[in-house]
Length: 638
Image 1 (tube, rainbow, N blue to C red):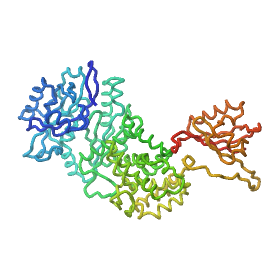
Image 2: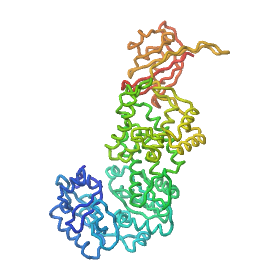
Image 3: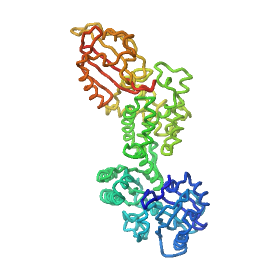
Image 4: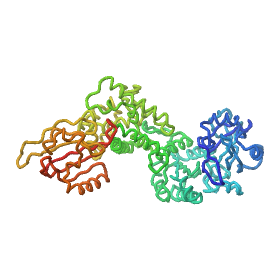
């Protein structure tokens, strides 16, 4: 994407950072994804090539002297920690972007590598220039802007000096965090040897808000979030301004559990919708094979940002959710039970994750996996997915490729790439006899083991094309019998205990079976028990225009019309007495507005002119076998 300014309007509020070699004509060493996209490039290598490896090559020729003077001040002993300047930079197309740059020297251990910015304060180091760039409008470009110094006492105590901060919020900026992250954690560990964590807050829809109400309102929302963080987060927290609207809380010697209530108070106090991500650093010696933790604050920040990104994907109000919407719609075309299946597996999976003690980031990823673990099924032929009988060996071989196809789909999408391996291995077995890789025990990704259990249980207690739903007791017995062979034995045990403690989680719902299974002939109940009378019923199917396209053997007995009379020639409305039709349409319409099921009492006009009273249950759904909407009608005579 190219961000350029026209007619003095602000086109974007994008920002990000570069790292340049201070001793090699400002050679580009690193650029984050924000600035790579901001300047119209696809990758860092393309940016390096186009700029002839130098950051100066991206600056408008008339402004290069201004930048060079600033870099000289920073590199040659001037008493300036940071320089702020505004100048013109050029994107890939050569168009000028108005930018504001914060430049300062970052000291890195010699030999650290171009793409490994390990910031230190050791002697014998090489200098790097850290540049934080933001796009600004023409009005702001022409304003003067003084430097502000850090008022944050905890931050200054740890660093022994004042630092420049974000002007809007008064918080140390992201450059300060990168520079001091190791020192912060080291100081914390001198006092206590326990978990620390990072929380990243972000305002949803800020770009749209800036566009609709103006940037002043957007800035006010960011400031309000910063004030809420100061008010509600633990007083020991240290705050930073991250990229764009991102605000960061570093909570040293505090676990996720300890800060959970504070985080929710921050979120609930804000006028705008705010999402958050959490990354944890656990104490030395912490052992939990089900918890993936970080060793440094830099790693924890990456985890927190990933957690936040996944929450944005899952949040329907976020622009980031469009990719999820597209994938789920594609999956629903081959499996109409997707929405209900996801809700059930998410409920069970998150409950099991909380029971085990998974961190927030892993719980969020688990929610995503409940949506996407079977995404590869969109590549499987419908006649295999919807086959009502047993599959042949050849058909099984095709079906089993869905794990690898899901891996390929996730790998092709940048936001989903980190979960691709988990999707790939969700059909591995604890004993190593699963597919596609034959992994065993702890070789199988942790969340793949979670998905394997909740997905298998939900499949058993709900109807499938090849069999009817099993009783919960039978499904639990299957999980128990296969613990230690198919399933992680500890997770299986905890899962079964969880179902016993909360029986509502174990109940299945017979969903989707009739959409893919051929109707079977059933006889009316003709026997009598006590005062019970015979029950007559029929079941038939309608197309999207409510034409009758399929009937069972009881249709003629119930309504008098033969199969030949009905198929393709009659609609549902031909069975309704003319004087009842308007009321019938109103009642059906009112019920289908609320969902896909309609249940009502009405009258049917038989072929011989007689009228009978019935109870009717209608269900609308998408039939993936023909890729069209259908309705199934079940009618009982009163």
